[in-house]
Length: 105
Picture 1: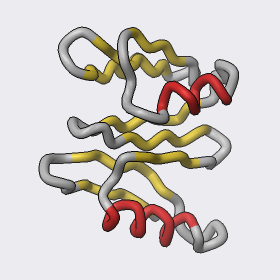
Picture 2: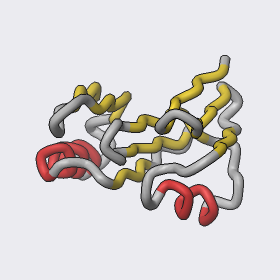
Picture 3: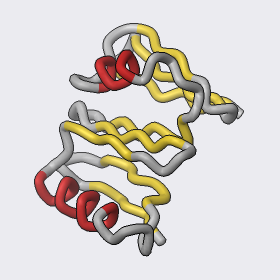
């Protein structure tokens, strides 16, 4: 399974079910740096990108990184992840005007 997320008209971020990934063009601020810091590890569970530079990444090991999100989304993500394993972030999707859909357990 391959998930391809388009960034603008000429860029993309491709995430494969084996956790590997590939990108072409310009990614949102901070995402390129995260991927470089992670040295190409093939352990991504999902990648969510928004139209206004928002992004969130979850690894198969449960680590979550995000940037460019609204204050409200930032607080919601931080609250979910602060609950010491009682909650698990399943996915987030970003919409227009700082809206988002958050799925957690």
